[in-house]
Image 1 (cartoon, rainbow, N blue to C red):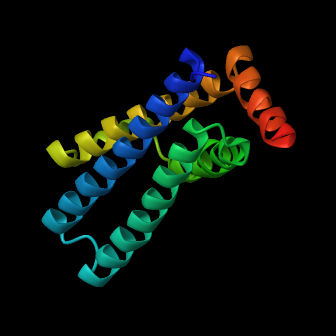
Image 2 (tube, rainbow, N blue to C red):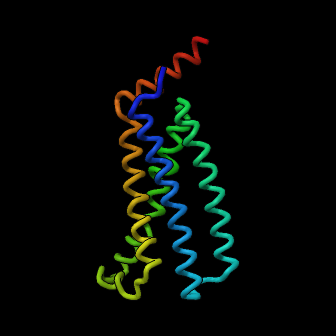
Length: 152
């Protein structure tokens, strides 16, 4: 069975989400270095951890495209739920502390704007991937893989 458009779209959006996440990391590092906002050791650790996570999820995304339902579930939980929460918890916490949205625009520079745009693209791509990954044709694609592996 060829990969349906829906599963291919999900694959494409997962890859775009990961690339946007990588871009976020780059923009954050540049912004932090320019502002002397964090230690080099902290930045290196953050880069290493994110690099490992992105590598794992690229592998999982490729497995999802190869009809592995475990990969589809891993992406839905790992990036769809946990990953999205990690992206939105800081802004929500910051707002709940009583900060005004207008305060978010104080001290913006090119790198922080690029970081914010990449974060928005990242979140949109995650939601789009989730949407496509669970469309009826995609569900059938993964179900057929399960029955094929059982009968072989």
